[in-house]
Structures are given as structure tokens and as C-alpha cells.
Image (cartoon, rainbow, N blue to C red; front, side, top):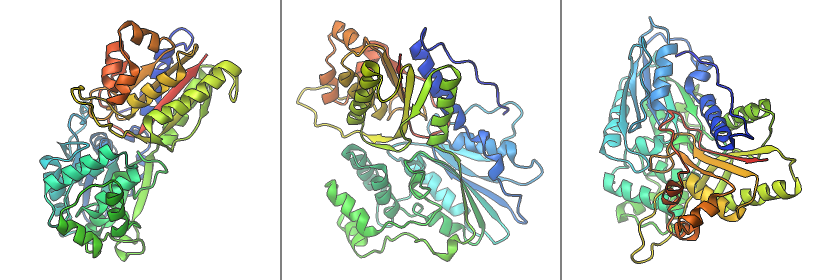
Length: 444
């Protein structure tokens, strides 16, 4: 599992689309767990070392730990990742940890079984033992263990309703924590009195460990009342028993100051900002000025696309606020509110990166000299097989030639159908990491 030198970037003037894809690959490479895990590993304990984990990067995090942990020190445990997200095992790397797969973003029975097993593995831990928790984005759906009195179907329905509502990730995770027996610090409480070290890859704006995968190993400052208010705000129905449990506080999570968190270490081993910086450095080395707007951009995907388009048009037309040539980079976690479907209209497909690109293309109005790529760093945009999509100066022209109406696809949230017809989907396959949205706009 050694690092190989990064290949040179494509010439941005000769092949702007490949240049943008190369920047995306640099961002993804920076977020691979082997890049920085070693510096955060504690020494082996007097007792045993148990590894527990969940997330889209779970498979690669487990393999990195297997490679880095002393070969003569015992290591065992269970990690759950998304279907199809276990990387090929490097030659010669012995398997010391079990990695299983489950559904994302809507949980399934496999995720429920994995969460039950993970919680069961905490039984009998002592102060001499060490628990290493490998947490990454997607862990919230993968580590599903419904609250008492709540079935998996209720969990699935509420989860899907939150996804469709346009709720921010922090709001979704507040609800998830309070409707779970393992999230919101409950896994850490179960590990007590063992020493607990959490290694996490951030996929959330602000890199708050209590939000990543709904914070199974860190205290939760949010409340049952807040979770109930969010469900009410988005008009998501609840079984009466669950509503009563939220109202009386019986589903409350462990709070900051709880002694069971004493001595717990949390280390961010990869973040969105680090990946954006890696892409920016690569662009500068290729002779293109780079501007990182933010790693925390949230909001409706298509509207964020329009905002980026306004900035790109200003640069292209007036050389302000940035001089061209340049590349504008941003990250964060946008959202897509699913529009009601008109009778007889085909169901839309696509995720937030594609939706961003539709909003961007519409607002760019065919602006010359502007190319863009938006993709999820886990390699999967929503639930489709693409990472994202790309936009070029002739996107609208080519769409018109194929009799594709962008407004129709926006109305149906059908980014996949629009960009597939144009041959402009970005397909990478799972990347085995996850630091959220990556957006790059090249202006020449």
C-alpha cells in the first residue's frame, strides 16, 4: 500500500475537461486514509484492540489500519461499508478485520445486522482495552439500529422522507441520533471503560465530529425537542409511540461532560479543505491560478450552481473578482429538494452534483471559455453509478441539437438523464473515501 507519484495534469488549454478530472483525482487521492492515518495511531494497549467502524471509506480505512498496525500486535473487529465499496486487497496484506456491506443512503437489514453485531462486540471491554473507531461519511445510514419500539421500516421511511425534504445534513443527523440505539455518542458509552480513539474522515461542512455519521462516538449537544421540531418542520409523520418518546425526552443522547467520554481522542485524518487545497496546489503547479471559495457551502444544489455561474461569468467577461485564467474550487454538502412529478412524467434520476451542474449550465447561458466539473468524492452521486457531471461552453447547444430541454430535466430532478444523453456523466466507480462535494470551474 505504498504511495505512487501523481501523474502530471492534462494541459488545461488543450483538454480542459481532463484537467478538471485530474484535479478531482488529486482531491480524492489526498483523502485516502493511508495518506495520514499513521500519525494518529496510539501504541498497542495492555489488553486487546477492538476495531469498530462504519462509512463509505470503511473498507480502505480498515486496510490502512491493517497495514499500519504492528504485525505482532493482536487486532480484530468489524467495519461496515456501502455495497461495492470494499477496495481490492493489496497483494501481501493479511486480512485482520472483517468488513461487511450494507445499503446507503436508505438503511437495510444488512446494516441493521452489522450495527447489532458492532454493539455486541463492546460487551466485556475493560480499562486495559483499546477501541479504534473508523468513522466516515455514510456511516449514519450504514450503522442503523432503530430506537426501542421502532422498526426498520419506520427508520427507512423517515430516512427517505428526510432525504427528499431538502433538510440540511445537520438536521437529518439530529433526527437520526435520537431515533437510534448506537448513534449520538451511544457507541462510545457502550465501549466504556475501554480507551477510545476515533479516526474520522469528514464529509460535513465544518468538520464537526458529532455530525459525521451522526457521531456514534462523540457526545451530542442536540436534544429530543430539536429532533421533534425538525420532523414537524418538514411535516414527516411519526408513530405515536416515537412522538411520545421524543416529547418526554426518553430518547435523549449522552451529553458533553458525560464521564464516559473522558480521555476519548478524536482525530480528523482527512477533511474537505485538505482535498480542495491539494487540487488548488496541483492547478497552480500547472500554471493556473486557483481560488478556493469554501469547503462549507450548503444550500439547494441548483441555486448554488447559479451562484457559481454568476461568479464564473463575471470572471470570463470582466476579469473580476479574479483574473483569468483561473480555476474556482468549492466543497460542502448541497441538497436537492425532490419536485412533485407531473402526471405521466418519467421519474428523474441523479444526485446533488448533477443537479448543481444543471443549475450551472442554465445560468452560464453558454458562456464561452468556461468548463466545469462537479462530483461527489465517494464516486457516487446520490444512488446512481456516476460520480457527477461536467459542463462545457457548448452544453446547451448540444442539448438543443438532441432536443433536450434543460428546464424539463430540472423540473424532474433528472440530471442523470440530461448528462447521460450528452455523454457528460463523470463515472469513476467508488473511490473508497468521502470528503463530500467537489466542484471545479475553469475559466480561460
